[in-house]
Length: 373
Image (tube, rainbow, N blue to C red; front, top):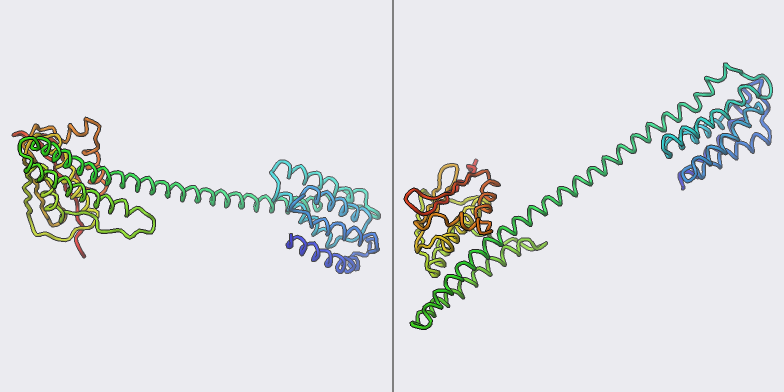
């Protein structure tokens, strides 16, 4: 690597220039000669492969440095090369092999303490010699631990981002599935009822069957349009079209009237704009409740009450049928009540469903609305 080449050349030049100056300040040392320069060059050039072969680099540098010191040459820049070799082993290798390599280098480095040309330091030189190994090894281990911790943090952050993206994707799929269920379920229920009416009228009064067939055409077209809006919202890059809301209740009432279910809509309080999520949830609760009435209640009428309050909006759907419409829908494998609960709970609202004392079924949802500040 370019960084290793630069480091090796810098230490090489510094070693060749500064070793002589170090010798001038150490009168008892062996004069710097060609052999010492060869050892300095060998140790510096070994750093060229320190990242690819840290143990080989440490072995070459240790042999050159120990030989240099045994021959009595002055303490000098060659020891900086030895420091870097020990540091590299600590940084790049696991703890056990790095410790073994450093221990071997220390033992070899101690040779000059007892067998140097000229006066040898003896046991008093063991502690200073150990510092040339212990200090760079400790620094290297600290750097290595910090790098591994940073790498683990990056991996954990990447995993967290991936999990968050997956969670959001799952939530979006569930949301779309619920939207499709509501749109398709309501549309098919209305079409099924209108088709039964048409089949009943066709043999005796074919002119009236045409009205039911026209309603089927209109209902299927409206359901397809709403399904297109829902699916278009999840296509990447597609602009979101306006989502359904309580303003569509008159159209929903007319569509159900064509299927044989008369719906009375009553509004309490002053109508006002609602947050899109609240408006959609309220509409879907009404739509799903009326769909269950159409499918299972066995009655020809239902009542819807929308109440705009100061800090919430409530919707109530009641009928006087068998009293088990919505519950029966869920028992038979549907997702009506479950979908209502999820929608309402997601917005911090409350949902109440159950049979009415006088007969029939009641669905009541209250959705909080933040006041404008």
